[in-house]
Image (cartoon, rainbow, N blue to C red; front, side):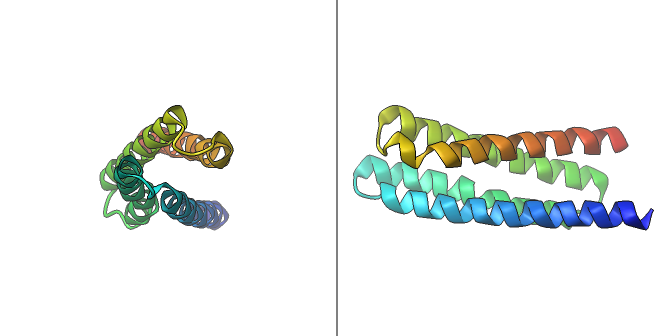
Length: 126
């Protein structure tokens, strides 16, 4: 039993670090956007949701109950999906070159899938 708990904590720590790295990449990307009025507005929106992903995940890790954990993970998923929207808008409007977006868009999709699966798993264990 302790081995399983240790592995779960290890995975949570890895995901926490990955989400922190994701926030750093969002910060760097938004710094490139701030040259125009539209760029500033989009950067502000993306900065809010993209950096809140990791913070909300940390909140979920400290949840008071399974229901609280699930609710907070759903907030994480909502923020990741919003981030993906803003990234897609940046790409489609060609505010930045596509090469600047490929990796962050892929990471956003992967993180979204991980969190969605975590929500499903947590609901099954309820």
